[in-house]
Length: 127
Image (cartoon, rainbow, N blue to C red):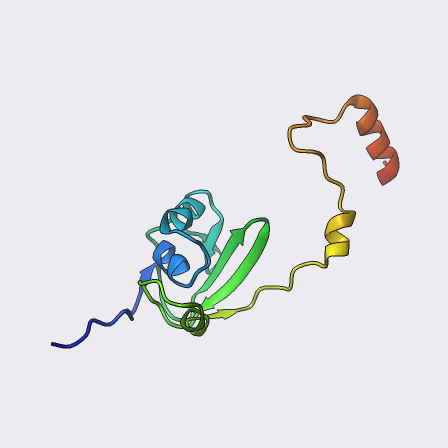
């Protein structure tokens, strides 16, 4: 009896992003597709969009964009070394920690800035 193969000519984008370990669970991958965080060849992708070798997949994960090209479509989750062979990562390098630390951030739940804070921000920006 021959062993079943995990390669296919095309697979669903949510299944492929989960299989190559861009998401921890398939439901997270499907949710990202529904939210518009996944694009295939520049177009927003639903979870059922089929990807094949050569397609460019852009995934927004935790504020950073990953740009990967499908080398081999797979439907079953594989180990990290095999997953690296199934995609070509063209993502830009993450910004250095110094740049991230210098970006202004409000505390979560602090609400909108007050009028005084908005005026200070406008003065800082030179508006």
